[in-house]
Amino acid sequence: MTTAQEHFHAVHTTAGRPNPARQVWALVRRNLTHIKRQPEMLTDVTIQPVMFVLLFAFVFGGSIAIPGVDYKEWLLPGIMAQTMTFSAFIVAIGLNTDLGKGIVDRFRSLPIGRSSVVVARSVSSIIHSMIGIVVMSVTGLFVGWGIHEGVLRGLAGYGLLVLFGFAMIWVGILFGSALRSVEAVQGVMFTTVFPITFLSNAFARTDVMPDWLRFLAEWNPISALVQALRELWGNDGIPLREGAALPLQHPVLTTVIWAVGLSAVLAPLAVRAFVARTND
Amino acid sequence: MSGAPAIEAVDLVKRFGDFTAVDGVSFSVPEGTVFSMLGPNGAGKTTTVRMMTTLSRPTSGTGRVAGLDVVRDADAVRQRMGLTAQSATVDELLTGRENLRLVGDLYGLDRPTVRRVADELLERFSLDEAGDKVVKEYSGGMRRRLDLAASLVATPPVLFLDEPTTGLDPRSRVELWGVLRDLVRDGTTLFLTTQYLDEADQLADRIVVVDHGRVIADGTPLELKDRSGRASLVVAVSRGDEVRAAEEIVRSEVGELHVDPDARRITAPAEGVAALTRIAARLDEAGIELDDIGLQRPSLDDVFLHLTGHRAEETADAPAAVPAEAEEAVR
Ligand SMILES: Nc1ncnc2c1ncn2[C@@H]1O[C@H](COP(=O)(O)OP(=O)(O)O)[C@@H](O)[C@H]1O
Ligand SMILES: [Mg+2]
Image 1: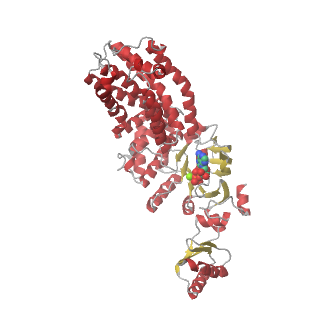
Image 2: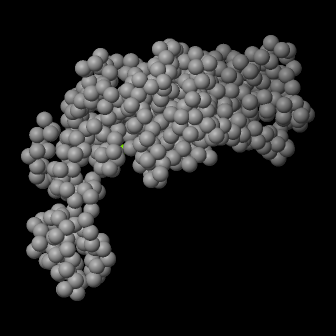
Image 3: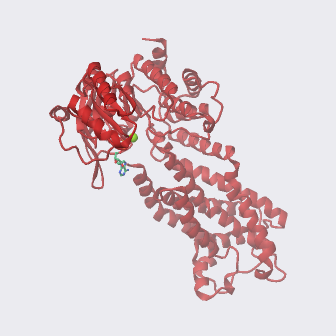
């Protein structure tokens, strides 16, 4: 028996016991290292939303706004909600890239919890999106946005954003597992999730929309989140339309219901898609 | 657990829809030995490895690693085996060291051990200088070595390697063989798939040859080569319109032969150097121009041609006539 073998047997006997929390943390750190090594991965939550702020505030702003009301302040919660919705993209692309590279096979051949990879991907995507929310908040402060209702309501708004982000993760796991390539993920999600964020009150007032469009926009879960943020933060310079759909009358509660409901429906589908993709 | 095989498969079957990728494969690998599954692309090697390493569920049949069922005791199996998959499974954006530490963390080794094992493995695989470079900058050979190192972090007693040297340059290949031999010397049981007979020949105690998801032969490297009829005679004709004439001459000297008109190559079982000289002289007499003539050691191709009656790379239908000896091997 060589020294190498003795040594390796020694290691084997000290081999620790798999610990789910540590596995998730190790994988989150790995995902964040990716961002550190490829900072351009962050453009989706930095340059892109900042561009939207500038575009809408200064280009379209004039035609959407009401005289005397600060459209930028009203707009910012909308763009933050959109950024958080795009967590779905971030999860889907990250997961799909890993699946395509076979690194998930490496992880699955180790004695780790089945869900660790997905949980870690979700956590790091939320962190990724939160970086974007911080960037948006700072940008907002520069263009005159602010939180006017105190710290607690301010934090409650951020809490709602994160909660909504967790619901979007299931969408990401579903698309990321079901589609076969990163290009497919980008194509399909760009043509679905992206327009859905615009079919809302994020950028434009619903009272000037045609009936059918207003119906869709006011029942859109994103609109509830946006309205909740506007109310919590005092960014509702443009008042809610008289007789707006029920969800917008109670936006905080509705956002929580949407987040929990979407998770309840999508989680089993997402898990099934992931398991199907990683078996065989 | 001496006596019990380290790896065992009984009638493994894997179907994808109505396509059968693995069609009743059985084998048994004693502890501390090297077992090689040899076969062309699409033979079912990766599918077999995936089933044995818990990544894919067998449609039917049983796989056992270290006496544990790969389906029922999947978690326990994962603690006892390492896998170096066919496509690299290291993280390109992490450094070599970070990759190994990640695997150590996932196994739940304590932190000082994780650090020490990562450093030691980097050194052992001559990656210590590149240890802090991101893997994207690694050569193919370095990636392979890192991939292998990652499989060894928890020193599994059983190691599966799926085509570990495919795509490597000859030098890296020989280096990797050296590493594998060291592992075997230290008591690891190896299961290795390959498309190259010489690789199986170099490393394996026992080989199964697979094609279309079935075992078509089984034996020691020596037995297989004997069965496939020593060396072959290869004649490469310069001009396409002389292939037929050359074929006539070769046929009159040897029995069966294989002609590849596109490559202008005639292959036949070698009947010794005397036959070679005779054939060369007669071709010369007939004024047939040659690019090359000589004896070739048996290759996977020859083994295949002999065992199945079709060439390895042909996607021919199931072999028309499986030789009796191969039939026996399946049982
Ligand atoms: N997930 C899958 N779905 C359908 N067919 C598959 C799948 N995986 C492998 N196959 C098919 O099974 C056969 C064996 O593949 P594989 O095990 O990868 O062969 P090898 O590793 O020997 O080259 C091939 O014909 C391949 O196309
Ligand atoms: Mg393969």
